[in-house]
Image 1: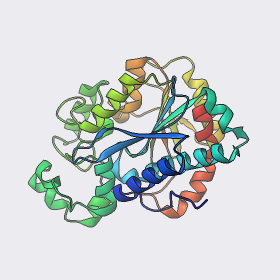
Image 2: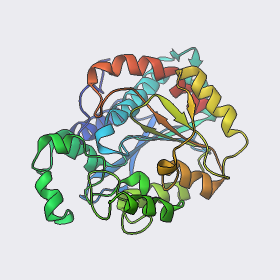
Image 3: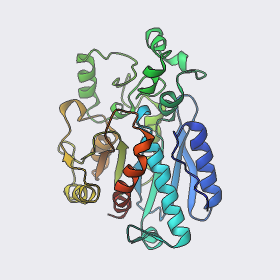
Length: 306
């Protein structure tokens, strides 16, 4: 069977096409839906595979310029579905047997507007309405857009969760970030953004065993958060580290709150991880994707299994 997900920039057109084709090719193995819509109205897709009783959540595309994580999520989803259909193993793991008792819910792009800005630029209907004149003027530069992290309102989604948000807000203000930016703004209040609200609502509906948020770059794993880290988190993190070769790290003060990982651990007292994939300047080159995927394939399987 011809590969559906190609090693190409995963803009909204391609993601919509690939998700639809995966649903058509594997209707008995995957449930396609959305968890909400972005500020500009794009669907935030979810792919449900396996037993949805206490599944694992994999989330990519939180930051626009880190769109290689969206490609990673969809590429892995197809890998899993193909292995199940053909009764093949992935890294010596029987995926059919695993997914009889384990479930995986994949959100490939939590921030589809940001991904679109980074890949295709700022010439999008409605975008200028949300950004101040100064920021919009910068958006005329293709290089400026390429490095865009935020959503369409200039809010950094991973600084918008209700987990010590006030601390992150103070850090941003001290750094001179007081309004919409390509990166770093916390938003006007916690969970002010539709993308943040969508994933918060999802976690309220589905009892996830743990959450893994994928970012780039740095090749490192963050696994703890203040006093909210469950005892088993360290052992799980060591498994992810051993399979990927990525070391475990402690977050810096400026990145220690208001993220998806932090919020989930504080809210649900369950493990959550941030995995920074690849090295180099974001957005990472597609040329390194085959190496990156082969290196992380076992970790992706184990992350769903532990």
